[in-house]
Image 1 (spheres, rainbow, N blue to C red):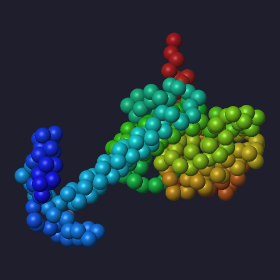
Image 2: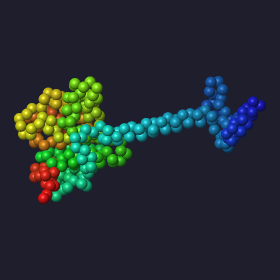
Image 3: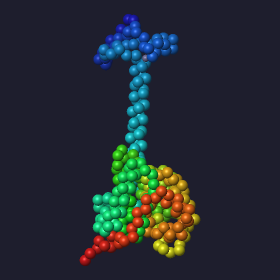
Image 4: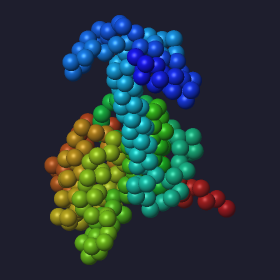
Length: 280
Ligand SMILES: [Zn+2]
């Protein structure tokens, strides 16, 4: 006991914390090894040193877990910025607010897009297709949905915007460039993993519109793999092609898979907004 006193006064000098051993035994640790654990009075509070140690370990584990969660959330949030494949940087400025809706079809389609965002936010799973001629704002509205999803709530959803044509080009280049990270596996894996995906301008990759061109086996293989990987995740797809053209370009099975549970937003009367904006 004389030794213990010495230790106590040493602790006291070094930390300013007073501690005193009691004769009470901890209920949780009546025996540890072959000795009971006695409660101590530390700074006026009666505690079991072993229980305190365990609590501290648990707290640290929780803290660690929270740090990992925050890191995960940040990683998901940054997918949009770091991994999207854009050919038009101007799309990064798009929002529902700066979508110019004048004609009734534009107004109705913008409202539909806002509703799509609202439903995705509520956890609903379905696909959205924007179909219509070039320049009517399909990419603009799909990007607006995606950016809102990325910013919403805890910002823990991974969102990705991919220009189909550019993605296929990068994969094709990777066949000859062994250093390239943009392999078929990279894109199929990435596009399958993300929570929300925009596939922009489907059908543009083969060139002509309305021509009887068939997609190559390579294109079909990549699109099939992505469609399979996203069966329970929402995808937003934009295309200049009609559904009939899409079916003849790919095959009915792929198109029907991509169109399962689809909200179709069609532009039929809207003219090219990029051309309309130029007035002399
Ligand atoms: Zn204890």
